[in-house]
Image 1 (cartoon, rainbow over the protein chains, first blue to last red):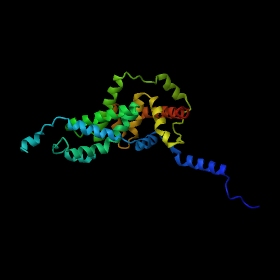
Image 2: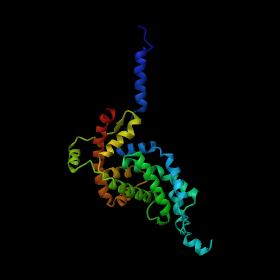
Image 3: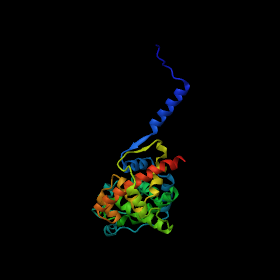
Image 4: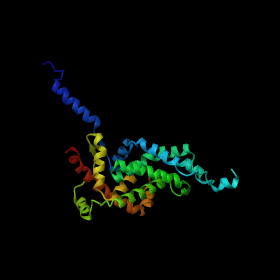
Length: 73
Length: 191
């Protein structure tokens, strides 16, 4: 008997769905491992650095440290 | 900036405050950890963004007070925890969990030692947040701190004002509760 090698379109769809699930599914051994993965995927909003930079510019100039005053630098 | 750079400056009474480039490096190194802790502890991206800004501004102002008695990460976490704790108190947030809930967890066939499975990695953050939201502040904080590989049990114990043994005991219960809540979150996220 000749073996069928081609998949029907429905079978291809099912296979593709299964493969997609396999690639995105993940298993974690512990809560901590899962949290680490979540943290690694978390993107720090760039707006924070911009706001921080602005805020620091508005800060008063810090006093010279004692050792600089001592050395007169 | 890594801890070692800060600590290199420490022994000879360092030229703090840092140069802008050095502070930028410090931010680059630690901002994700601080933001993530704030995000998952507060459960709100906008509040986490504000908190991270405020924490690093405090760090900029107070860096000369860093004594090097703990790691820089621990010191940053201390500022972050205090800041987030104050925010939560000012919002009059209430814990969703009572002792009764804890008893339920203890008696549930929790899969604390079983693997956690997520079918869609994109839903991971949402499900984690839902599970964390159901925990007490203390359990949530312990899990988040211990998940950071840079933090030892002793450092977590110091940060949370208890012994390392107490941390281990509470972590056991926190993991179990988290597992139950994470399992429940599967159906909630799908609906």
